[in-house]
Length: 268
Image (cartoon, rainbow, N blue to C red; front, side, top):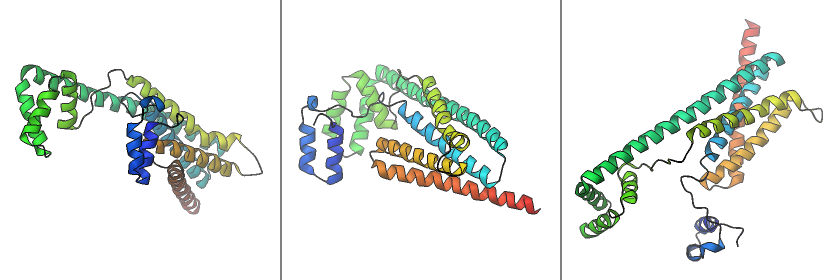
């Protein structure tokens, strides 16, 4: 049992509709299971890594396919590919940093506003939350009890109001958003290199370079899709297949477009 997590049991019970299993999972001694309930700090760099990898791989896979369809020379393809790889990685890395910074700045501003209101108008905040609780179906008496109880714990009360009033999680002050951008950049370059490197440097079984690039890229897309599915608690096989199909469709579209443009130029 210790090799499974409590969250595994809870989700397995939900997927199978097993009420008894769900009750048992919630009543288990936490020491019997690894604790892996999601938190703000857990896996904060896994998301930019996986999404950077997927974007890099899909983008460069499509670029290689389009270049082959357009019948570009190997040198031209390499030059365009490397340029696209670095430019795309910089764009994704900087974008991750800017978006994360903006999200954190907004969260910090809202937290400061809520804290100021709690310190200067605590009764008004309680009254406001009572109204929100009542709008969600609580009676006036229960809403007052909940608000008066939670307001005794300032930090929890502030974070609770942020989530309830404006649907915003508190900022993770320990998160290094620069590292998040770097992780996105590195993962984009690392996995975006797969189609290029496999096209130029791998050879086996008499297969063409493009066939090798397709096999390596599709396999990597499947693996990344399976990993991504863990974030949304979906079957890894399904996630892997869908990601492989999506990447394949993008590459196929790029190949067809490149071939069409090449044919048009050749006939003009």
